[in-house]
Amino acid sequence: KEYMIIDGIPVEINGEKNLLELIRKVGIKLPTFCYHSELSIYGACRMCMVENKRGELEAACSTPPRAGMEIRTNVERLRRYRKMILELLLANHCRDCTTCGNNGKCKLQDLAMKFNMSDVRFPNGVTEPEIDNSSPCITRDQNRCILCGDCVRVCNEIQGVGAIDFAHRGAKMKVSTAFDRPIANSPCVGCGQCAAVCPTGAIVVKNDADEVWKALDDRNTSVTVQVAPAVRVAIGKEFGLPDGENAIGRIAAALRRMNFDRIYDTSTGADLTVLEESEELLERLSAENGTMPMFTSCCPAWVNYCEKSHPDLLPHISTCRSPMQMLASVIKEQKDLPNKKRVHVAVMPCTAKKFEASRSEFTKDGSPNVDYVITTQELIQMIKESGIVFSELEPEAMDLPLGINTGAGVIFGVTGGVTEAVLRRLYAEKSMAGLFAITYKDVRGLEGVKKATIQVGEKELKIAIVSGLKNASELVKQMKSGEEHFDFIEVMACPGGCINGAGQPYGSSSEVAARGKGLYSADKLSAIKRSEENPLMNELYGGILKGRVHELLHVEY
Ligand code: HC1
Ligand code: SF4
Image (cartoon, rainbow, N blue to C red; front, side, top):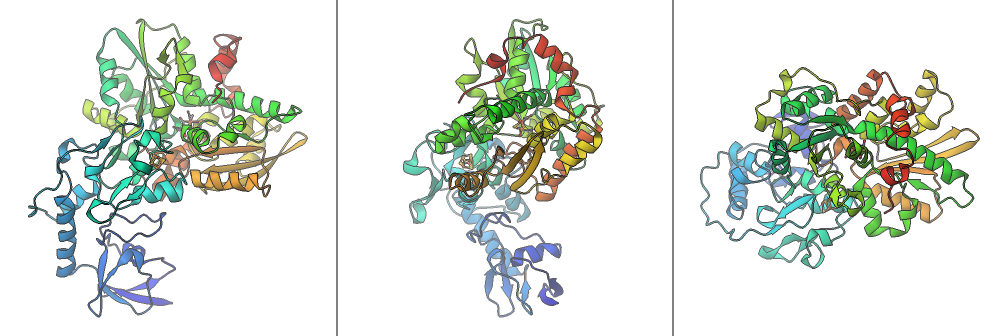
């Protein structure tokens, strides 16, 4: 066993990659801006400096632990340095925290408070705001950037998109798109992962809550809402409930108090997707020249990524609309609401859904099927604004006639869930044993790439499940080179799937895992586990959808 000494305490080294991880294990959380365990080490912010026994300073994030090493994490000199770094950052940063989109979640604000920053001795170098509002998903404000590079690395290393990078040198250095174009004209796919890691308000998710309030306040407008699968397991913690607890009943109760006229579950749309997608897969498999393999189409960032970076793959993407859009098309056909003026809102864990809602493919008579997408974080803000004490709400049910869903639709929110739901439909063995056989066949777990071979009737189906766009593009490369072959590929842009969407409150890896577990528990609890057994499906296919399946449930990108 190897040991080192941290603040006078002997600590066993157990494969930790850097001092920061080991220091965290002894109950000390050093301040950092540019450290994320899943990203490469940048070592730029210098907040995590520690002092070794020779009195030298080392950055804890980029120093591996060595046997016999002795360090101090909290001495007068280090506190002074950290405070000086904060002061220099603040000198070049707007300080209008109360109106910033990241108010209350900002690391700079948090550390300024923890370090008792009472004064900044330098003149404020920030003059004009430098805002890029071109994307429907994110807003960038250069003046709030502290150059930690977290956004650049997540966009390159996890998403493989590379829409942003550092430009210029010295005091002119900034994070920029190529040729400083608006972000909407860059390869950006709106996944929002850059906003999720941004420690300040330099990249924030667009906020549409005010528009939703306006619709709710208008007595001549009926407002319907749908809630995505992953929202239910990520909202509770903010209100003191355990990580991963399924709060869908409380969400329904809160939305009803906020004046929404009909409350539905996107999982109902997911049931439609399962039926359509499994049918499409079988058709493609049996057609002589069926375009194979088939990729899933639920994730709008993935679809956009193909449009921008792999247009040759577009015929391989399922023609199914996403569950959000399938349900929205059906909701638009409902005639049971008093007002002519209708607004439909979707609560999503995802920032790219804001872009999907704005696409011209999803409009009827010139108006979008989904008028506004708000993220889980925006819903949390609206609930708080309403004064609703979420934890004290009695859970309530969804509304009829569309409020019936299945466990298969709920697990869509975690990577592998779409595949499992489709397999439940395709799998011949419809007993409980059959369900378990699918469950354990390599489709569960939060790994970025999973592969499985499943027997469906006569056919051996080769399946891949990927989350994180970089993983997707690497898989595509292997497929194009002939190294790998698959029939069905599920892609979700966010690592782990929608449970880790950029619209969710920030979650550590264990919190994200708890969200995944929460969705599987919700599936266990639901009486109906297969989409085709949802009694609403028969009603819809025999009613609204009769002769209109293509018009209402499919799309070509
Ligand atoms: Fe998702 Fe989906 S699972 S894409 O991650 O297919 O956003 O939750 O709503 O549409 O159902 C997101 C989640 C969501 C769709 C479904
Ligand atoms: Fe990159 Fe996604 Fe951010 Fe766009 S939204 S810049 S693709 S990380």
